[in-house]
Image (cartoon, rainbow over the protein chains, first blue to last red):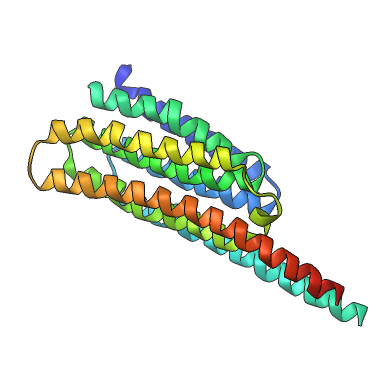
Length: 89
Length: 163
């Protein structure tokens, strides 16, 4: 039983982070929760003795996912702002 | 389950989980330093688990995270600079987070160094510890720089919108 405690904690962390990522509606806040989900998944993979999967998950989860989300948010906001300006003119 | 794995699990539960909660809630000014703290602590958890499982290859994940974690923080600081400047973090809490980083890294790395003994693995551990300390220092400096630069920019932006 004691052997399984770390894996159980990892599973709970992943479940909580995943549920949080679904429930949060603002994309900027969601990017933080998504990066946490990536970190939790990496920890779970390491606990399940799969360091190669954990490595790739770390690379994707901790830097690439937030970058994509934040860049998209920035682009959409800029577009919306320029459209609003055109309407005013 | 040996002592190292137990220590890693305890740090995961009592260190990473609260830091992750702080990252997932609250204003952006609290989330960015908390994100940096989360990655630092998780990297230390990976080091402890690597020692606990007796697999030196697992140290690589900690090495990757010690590079990518501060990179992620810098990314947030760069892309959310306007929000950080609008509601800057309290200097005291920023200082406390950085101090926690500085305390946690030697507290985990030094016992691991004694357990590992001299050799290449020791050098790798020291490099990871150095990267973690350097990363948290860079992150806190970037947050401070974004706040001060944002105040200057906010003034000029207001001037532009008036014109």
